[in-house]
Amino acid sequence: MTFHRAVPNSVGHLGSLVEAFLPWLGLVVVLLLVLALVRRSATALTVLLLPVAAWTHPFGGLLLPGAEPDPHDLVVVQHNVSDENTDPAGTVRALAGADPDLIALEELVPPTLGVYAQTLASDYPYHAVRGTVGLWSKHPLTGARLVDIKPQGITEPWSRGLRTVVHTPHGNIVAYVAHLPSVRVRASGLASSQRDESAGLLGEAIAAEKLKTVLLLGDLNGTVDDRGLAPLTSRMNTAERGFAFSFPAAFPVARIDQVMARSATVRQIRTLSPTASDHLPVSARITLR
Image (cartoon, rainbow, N blue to C red; front, top):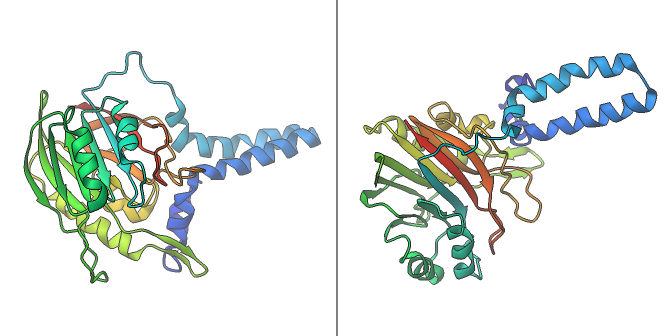
């Protein structure tokens, strides 16, 4: 848990695979605790303080309660709605129930895109869609454009990056919506090269951004501990509180749906009620600086 960066990534992206499930390594500590109690070993219980501290240092803060009331300027929702979603209208109701300022969606496809646009229109009059990703907003949007994050190995039509300026009551911010390539666990290890390449392209775009405050919402197909997302996590803040495991919806084991910020603070992130997608939606509170 402490020295996961020492796990090499050169063979099968083993380091990234370990980091994708890093919080779950704490279950080993629970098992050791049970064994120590069964054996009634004071020495074992004392030694267990070390792995407990190793887990608490990176993850303990995510469990702390927030301030009441939690100070924030914006509420945002991020959701991969699935291109096989059979209830887009119900999905919209679940997302809008959190009363967010911004709603970022991925896997938008022609049969359901019109339903999302029509159902969201009354409360979110401003929206921008590029390819299969989109952003709906209560605040005006300008300068929407495609962001090219397509890896070289993909030859078919592929458009999964969007950049736009959001004119909030607290000032102008840049919002990016992205859907990075999927990863697969195979016998040879974690297949994440295309995801990593796409993350690098997105990181370069954000680094070149002139406006100070930047939000990134998207299905990044990786956790914030995964070194494959380092081009993003090295430049942006992640949630101060909350695990919000979002995938798979039936039994969430990792948060691959992310909200990150530059020159802003992601106060808390949480999951919302399930939709007809294989991802859970996540909601985050943002404090602008």
